[in-house]
Image (tube, rainbow, N blue to C red; front, side, top):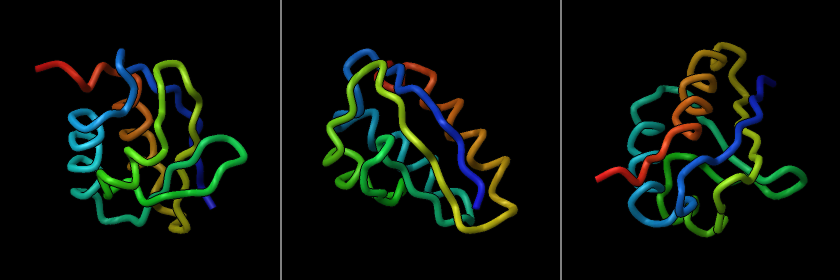
Length: 89
């Protein structure tokens, strides 16, 4: 099961606007991918509401996971996206 660790670098965390942008990008991928805090419960990355329910703040580490062994490149793209400020208007 491939996974990637990433740090949320959105200046205001994953509130509505950046969570929606992240979920849109994730929904374009053909893999089922989840996100969780280290030790936390996973939620689907393609759900804006579920992403917001995590209450992720800037600087928090998360784990992106898929049950598809071919999802490595998709996980890399999502991890890189979290390393940007998705709240740019």
